[in-house]
Length: 222
Image 1 (cartoon, one colour):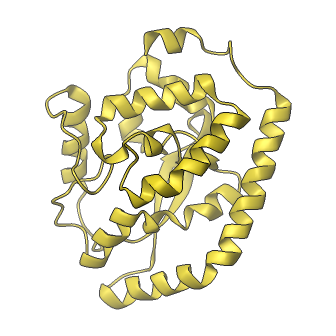
Image 2: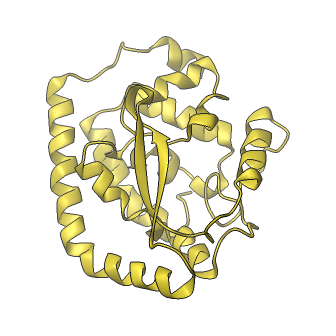
């Protein structure tokens, strides 16, 4: 990661790329929201019917330049639970005490997590819980492609080289998604975030978008 961090700013795309990326974000997110509205409403209904609580889960994450924003997801957990299990898991992953990624649930997600509902487990496995993030993209808080949106307390544990990931908007998908999401160590995923920032281009974004459906079907690309 050191070599990538040293290249900060040397490969930054210009305004044309940024404008084109934003145009694609708006166009595709709006189209997917319209097309996927019936599915999203149906999933919201199932969330409400299978467990008590709201259909949508709102959580503060860090965006570009570490600016906080409210990320939207379909709720996959029981309400009023404690996040100490996740905090402990992430802390051990970043400290090197536990390097094995989750087997089925995906990057940073515990396979055995008593906080998750039965329907929520399926939502996470299929990444359907992330559909509401299309509204975050439409609002300009996220992009279709970018680093994974992280929590503030997670960012506090990142080393200096990882800070480069905050030079761009977080994404619904990214290099971490299409390069073995469910088999990655946390450090490898962070390295891929930095690699994306350094290599980002219209072509790379297109490749990631085209590879994402297959990655989702496989539970993380190989």
